[in-house]
Image 1 (spheres, rainbow, N blue to C red):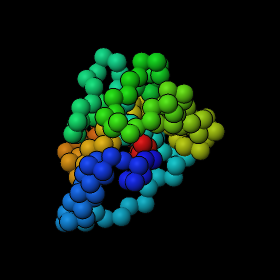
Image 2 (image 1 turned 180 degrees about the vertical axis):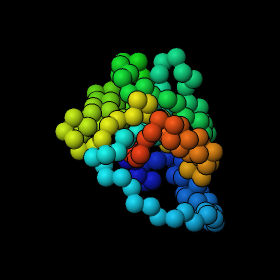
Image 3 (image 1 turned 90 degrees about the horizontal axis):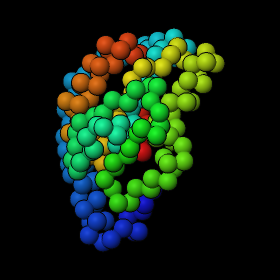
Length: 159
């Protein structure tokens, strides 16, 4: 993670302004009743990565993109591209091991060990450099898709 003191002064100022905007925002969410989730050993898990991953033939993520891309569970890692927009983003970890940004292999190991009930046939990727409050519609659509896939739990992989 890059520290503000390591950024160009103009970029640091921009980041501080974005943080102040979030602090001033008054988010008003409807109350959602608490539920007791299924035990993990009985749950199908989907991954949501903020690493801006997508298949080579999918559109690249662009600045301010609030969309998402579908990542098939059985995808060959060589077919994935990362189009994260931040100049401060280090891609070497992803190039060495996909599981750093999308831990598909770890999920299958947990399923094989009986720790989780199963792995979703599809995972989701978003551009994490976009303001989180802009994702309300995207989050609702991802939730509907996960419901249709009988996913019980999502694991957010922040990058």
